Length: 118
Length: 114
Image (cartoon, rainbow over all chains, first blue to last red):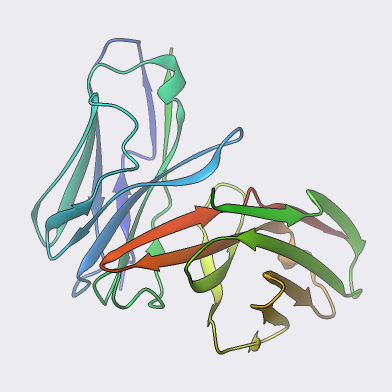
C-alpha cells in the first residue's frame, strides 16, 4: 500500500490567491482527517470525515477554509483567499474505523504539504 | 480548558542511553492517550494508544505508561539509537457523547548523538 498520498508537497503562493491541497487516503479507510502544524501552535485538527461526510469542522479557523470529500478516495482542503498566517504544514490522515466511536484506531498520516503564503 | 503539557521541550542524549519523556494533561472526559513520533519533514507515526484501563503499553524499545489518577503519561525509550532522533507528540482524546476532541502537546524534540 502506498500510504496516504498528498499533493503538492510544497506550495508557494501570494497572499490573496486560492490554494487547493489534495489527499488520497489509504484504500478501505473510512475516516479522513485534515491537520495543520506550525511551530507556534503545534498540531491542530481542522476537520474530519466519516464515510465521506464531514463530521466535525470546529477546528477550521475561518470561513476562508473549506474541505470536501467527493468520494472515498479523494479529499481537498481549499483556502480562499490565502493569507501569510496560513503558512504551515498541512497533513492529511486516514483511519480504518470511523471516529469517534473507534477513537483508539491508528491514524496514518501523509507526508504533508508545506504551504508558504507570501 | 483542556491542555496537554510535555516536558522537556528538547533533549539531547548519547546513543545507547535511556530517556523518559513526560506528558501531563487536563482533559476531560478522558478517552485515550496517544504518543506519536515525527521525523523531520515527515508526518507523525503512531507509537502507542492507551485507554483509561491501560497503564503500560510497549512498542519495541518504546514503553508508554499512563496514570489516569494523576493525569500523567510517560514515554520511555530504551537503548536509544540515532534513528530515535525526532519529535515526540502526546495527544489526548476526550469523548463526549458522539463528539471526540483531540488536544495536542507541543512535543519534545529528542536528539540522539554519538
